Image 1 (spheres, one colour):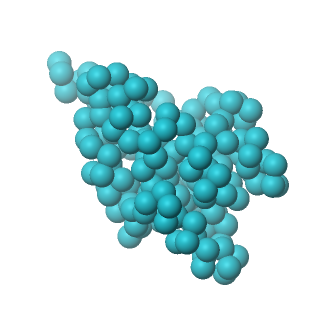
Image 2: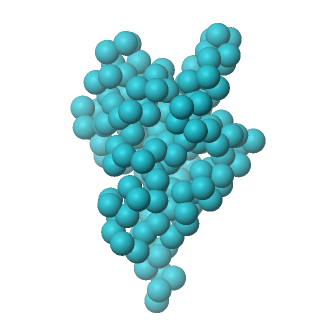
Length: 155
């Protein structure tokens, strides 16, 4: 089972793993209502390396990005649910609208994002590529989204 870590603690948590040669993968998102699309995406991300770190948008940043009715679940619950997944090693809540600072802190070997993001559009891509890290865009599962789940629940 993974661990929820504070922003300032993630570097220390990763250091002993890096010393063993473990490859760190990073991704991020709101993960408001976890669904099969999230699970498949996170499993695929984890399979790219040895350690998966997931940045979780804070409640305030989700509201700014998704609107006043979101998130449905609070940041601590979202981070804990993700950390309980076998494919997730660490979750870290970040308060900014983007995970740029967290990416600098984690210093991942591989940065991944889901959907149709072009590599140059992925936040943190320039930083990760500057030290020889990889940046990848993984496909989302069609028809699976938190917004669709919320709409269906309302009807």
